[in-house]
Image (cartoon, rainbow, N blue to C red; front, side):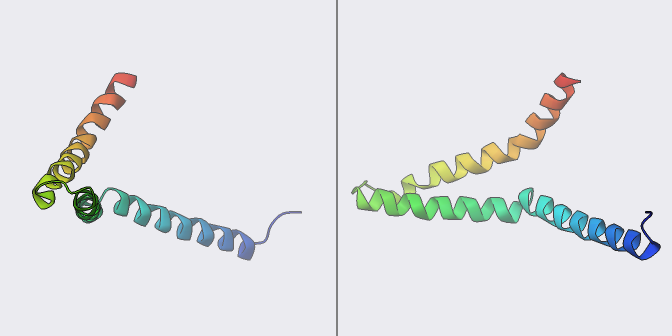
Length: 88
């Protein structure tokens, strides 16, 4: 039994909708907005931790891991391209 044109069109529409969702998810995963939100969240969580354990100057100390995170994700595209080129 062959599928009719309506069923094929419905399947194509489902695939297109899925592709749009995947593209939006990928855009979010690679966005600087996401990276900054993670860095800010990391900063505040570390401040809370350092404050609880009575770390001297927790607001200053928490900057280091947040900046380290931003530096690490900013080098990822370069390292990814390098890794891909070496695998070919």
